[in-house]
Amino acid sequence: MRQEQDSIGTVDIPASALWGAQTQRSLNNFAIGDQRIPPELIHALAQIKQCCAKVNGRHGLLTAQQVALIERAGEAIQTGHYDAQFPLSVWQTGSGTQTNMNVNEVISNLAAQESGESLGSHRPLHPNDHINRSQSTNDVFPAAIHVAAALQLQRELLPELKQLIEGLDTKADAWRNIVKIGRTHLQDAVPLLLGDEVGAWRDRVSDGAHWLCTAQAKLLALPLGGTAVGSGLNTPKQFAHDVCAELASRTGSRFQPAENLFAVMAGHDALVQTMAQLRRLAVTLLTIANDIRLLACGPRAGLGELRLPSNEPGSSIMPGKVNPTQCEAMAMVCTQVIGMDSAVAAAGAGGHLQMNVYKPLIGLNLIEGIHLLQDACRCFRLNLVSGMEPNRERIAYYVERSLMLVTALTPEIGYEKACAIAQHAHRDGLTLREAAMQSGTITGDRFDELIVPAAMASPHR
Image: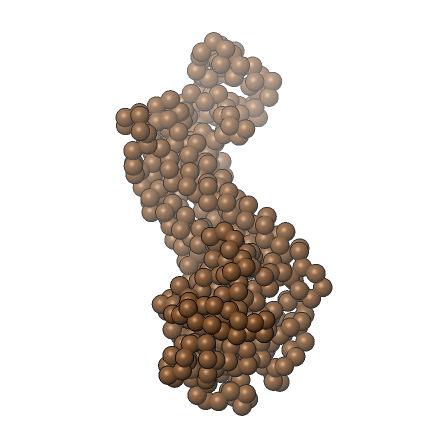
């Protein structure tokens, strides 16, 4: 162990640890759960420290050597090699101060190692005076959530959604001529095309991706430069614009200062909105997974209209059973994300005056929600969508037996007579045509002209 001094007193720290006194105090005082601050957030903080150092160096607030040390330490942190040096629980101070200091302390000690100084010496970089220069946790921690989430969406979830949309589009195109029975209230309805059913799934996912893009654009407005309350105290002139420009240059994303730093620091509405769009996507994906699971149920005693890939045995007792496991995994992920959104909404509403003290929770759920949906969509696409196929025989069987084809007769003979034909067919086990002929309300030739399932499924094509 080694001892370090902070403003409160002396702290014992593991000798090899790169963190310092404030991180250790947080470890001692907040041993709550296993959830740790996500590495994406740590890496974003490290990149922000680099940008702030660069701008501070231009203003003569840091020497060229100090800027270079922060740059190298920040780069090393972003490789993930030092992730174990960021052990703090999410359930800590609501501002994220202890994680901000964790990053500052690790950068300080990496610089100390490089410079031949002892760990905890704060030479040649002090965690507060140099690495945290022109910053406050209150602006850099939420900015790191913005950066981590925006880049995750841009680089991970949105590209995966594009591939899922393309996979569904391929199926919709291949199945565009397959006529099947629609269902409303889980009861037989009029015909539609299987391609149209799958095309609806595709376009709902596409809408979800569109709204996520809109939310992602709002994340590009950062609170950097607002320091403690939004006023920019202890920053050089134009710091907010300069540091955001530096970050934009390094990431290739159009980060810029928020128009009103007080607003984006007092409330985290852009983060709440992004989580809400993740929930919206989860709702869509959950209904699609449930639709596929229902259409594939059976295979002999259920609907059985879709055949799903046999990825693994489905039962420890029933031989040959295969279950829609990808649908089930997707359903669980979506349900989790819906619940996480509720927590973020409550957290977003929990701020008071110039400060929201639910930042780590918001960051955890947002970053974890993006991860979960990206992984679930990838597995769903590769292990289900790409391999599912229609059961054409079963689909045709249902079309032939459907009583709801009678709907095409209503303009000709009226609703009540058409209803009587359907009820007669159902009651006596007749085909719709047989019941119609017995009713005497329509000729066989006219019946055959009107009851054409393909034409009913595409009346205006």
